[in-house]
Image 1 (cartoon, rainbow, N blue to C red):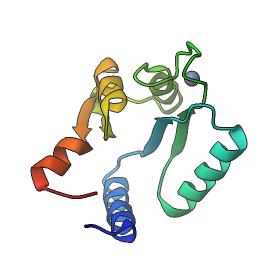
Image 2: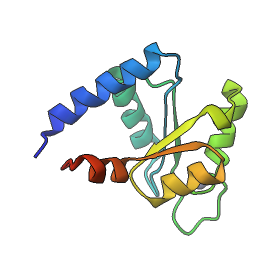
Image 3: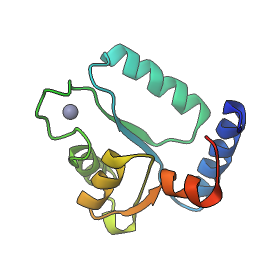
Image 4: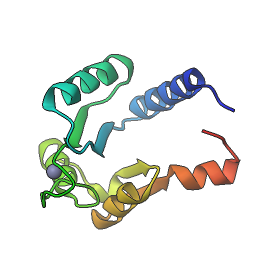
Length: 124
Ligand SMILES: [Zn+2]
């Protein structure tokens, strides 16, 4: 069993490696019904620890039909526009269906953490 701290250290190393190789790192996700204050605090905590460029979150409820809830690509399009991204050069790294589907919908490259876990037999 991998400890949470070990995951955090490995994730930090991976983020630093990617940043040093010219990648812009974004966090994207659904946090349904989570208040803006909580989202802002979460972002602040992550910014302190990881070299994340920006945080894109849909915190609408599951019932709302917004364009930003993954697997829809509203948040991706915001990042594309703001940072002038070429989505065919971008990677979506995620651990379940909305992330993988979102990456596919946006025609991005996809790295499924679940598949990587299975390939390497990791317990996370
Ligand atoms: Zn939304």
